[in-house]
Length: 272
Length: 347
Picture 1 (cartoon, rainbow over the protein chains, first blue to last red):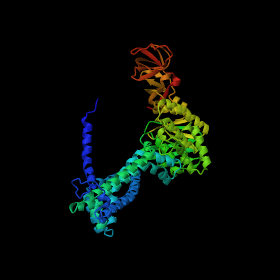
Picture 2 (tube, rainbow over the protein chains, first blue to last red; picture 1 turned 90 degrees about the vertical axis):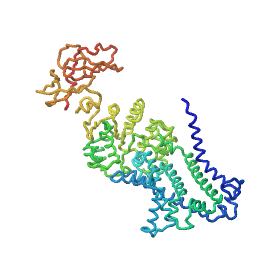
Picture 3 (cartoon, rainbow over the protein chains, first blue to last red; picture 1 turned 45 degrees about the horizontal axis):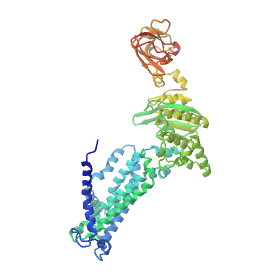
Picture 4 (spheres, chains in turn yellow, brown; picture 1 turned 135 degrees about the vertical axis):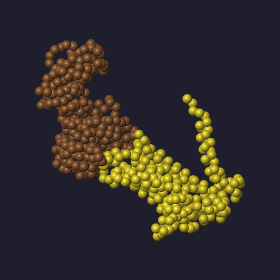
């Protein structure tokens, strides 16, 4: 039976439809002129060479980029270990309350981001006023909503690994921390890497929480910067900034792919 | 030198998985826990290994109480049904895993890993990953990984369950060889009666968390104490009967049998291969007439099913000695139930 021809056609139309806006945005990042709507040659003006308005030379753009990366880095460093530990704990929790905790854990995934952000805003301006708004609040916000994703990813992997290998390691004489170090963490490697990537992507992409938790110019992230200047005086430097973000995300993906291509057995062993 | 299970109890919520199990397993014994799934055999094994917490009773190994110790501090090792090999380590690394906690020198580790791999005939695969091995090879690695620690007791949880029939028979022979060579105690869990009969020194048949009967394979087969054991090990005819005045009655026929002081309703048990098929009208004791209901050809023997007048169905194995069975369904015949082959069991 031959497959219908229109299936690949639909697929390719969809791919083009979803990629085209991105490609157009990237195209204008390299525009030589000031327009973001008509092609005016090619240059690196908006990335590097423009003395005042390029990503390199406009301090607000460079600062936004740096702040976004710092936030994403901190979110990764905090959310992934916390989420992994939580996933392992929840996986072993058999007693009363484990079912409820599982549902609660997934709640942040379906809570509207705006509701979540407003809640946090009230929290940090009243009950936990000592924290206040700013970078700390932004990091806490990002960590809070990313942990659910980390737990989801790591637990999926834990289910796949099963209890057997942990029991086997303990049976062979390994004390609990050795079981973690020699067996569980190596096997969780792919899930932890996937979590790091996911948290990075969530944090870099986030606008609502970062906006609500922000306390001024030095806590402006890239999405916030793009949003605010899109209405004021947009230049292709914004496209350049977005392009840099895209390249960074793709680089992270490529890195992960390279890491796992080098050790395929860690995956294949569990795919049986 | 023995492993003693003293009144073990394990509950999962309201379910009694292990219900007052007491067993004494001698040093160097090949001991099998046999039963259908859910009978508590694996739970009992997991209690010995330390993966489950005991709700009652005690486990002692050579007099030491090990029941309160975590699994990594118990001198027993386990071979898992799923093998549970570490997929991120080579075969040699898998086998060497436990030696790290035994305080042995590097050269000693290499020597013992080498020996264990030779014992299971896998020396040439040391650098492979578990994912690159066949099921039988993975099972051998799991065995080597446990045996390298020279445990006094090895626990095996349906180790051959995931293998195909032919490989299973090869590995049964090999397991028995290894157990006899190393002279260590094997506690073996299986639901396969053939496995239990061929390898074990003693078998405990379990049902509903309790031990139904524990004895040598021959005794279990020849002298089962309950209908469950009779049915689970091999096949058997269980004919509803009554015992009155020291005689066994099946319908209107009286049979001679050792009634063992029983009275009232009973089951007359006889193995199909002990039932003799004779022409209709043959006289003598313990002969009951019936009607052939079906003849099933099974290759090495034929299964002849005879319906007695009392309504009971008696299966009779007729060995395939080259001569075709002259009976066909509908024929009147006579079944001979020799008195020394009949056992009277509780219904």
